[in-house]
Image (cartoon, rainbow, N blue to C red; front, side, top):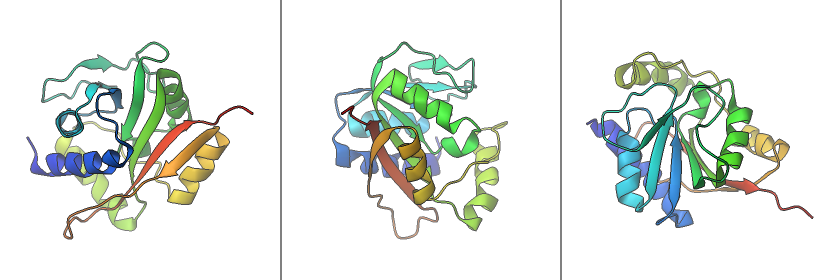
Amino acid sequence: MSFSQELRGKIIANSYKQWNISDTKVLDVGCGNGVVTDVLKNDLGIDVHGTDIVDYRKVSIPFMKMNDEDRLPCADGSFEYVMFNDMLHHTQHIEALLQEGRRAGQKILIFEDVKTWFLRIFDPFVNSFHLHGMKPAINFKNVQEWCRLFDLLGFQYEIGKVSYPFWYPFRHMVFKLQPKKSR
């Protein structure tokens, strides 16, 4: 297993701890090889299932293959949380996937890269190393762009805090979403 992926998993898990999601059923969309998913399962104490458009798994986690890039392979309300960890910037279907997250779960957690020139250069290299054949990053957003999208799609959201080791080269944003309550 990759040290860098395990470290990223720990950073993601620590970011999600602020919302106390232990003992919940979670879908990790775009789970990749499952290394991060496995770290999240162990560090957060969650019942996590992975899904992706390709079965890249290197670890044994419950998995459902996506047959369509913008449709999650599960019934309505199957999960308490749907996670999108560092994957939304790889799709043209952000809005559809967020709507699917709303359909499949009660709440959504997003851990996403901060848009920087360094990341635009480095992201294709990192992904080619870990997940051969992954689509290039095409949809980086800044915090304001994410928040506008959440408002447009009818989500209320919280912006969380992310902590890193001092030497970690990337920066991320973390959000918790749920549908806006009807008035």
